[in-house]
Image (cartoon, rainbow, N blue to C red; front, side, top):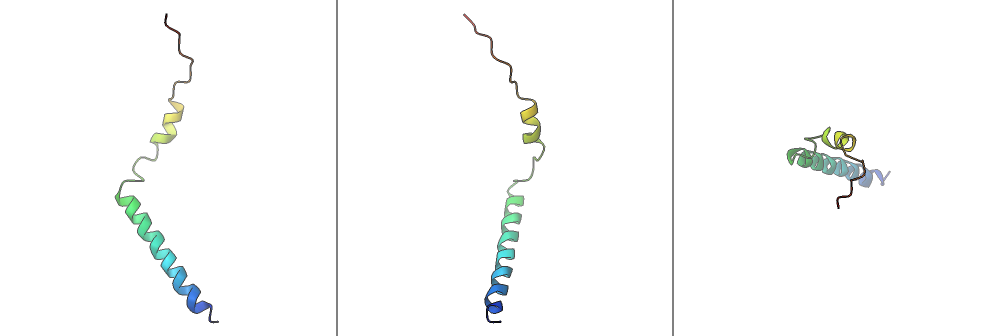
Length: 53
C-alpha cells in the first residue's frame, strides 16, 4: 500500500512530462512534414552515374 503513495505521483509526473514534450515538439514544427521523408526515398535517383572523360 505504501508503494502506491510513490508510484501514483511518479506516474502522474511521467504523463505530465510526456505531454509537455509533445506540445513543445508540436510547437517547434516537428510534425509539420510527415509525407516528405516518405516520398523522398521514392524520388531518389539510384541509377549509376555515367563516367565523363
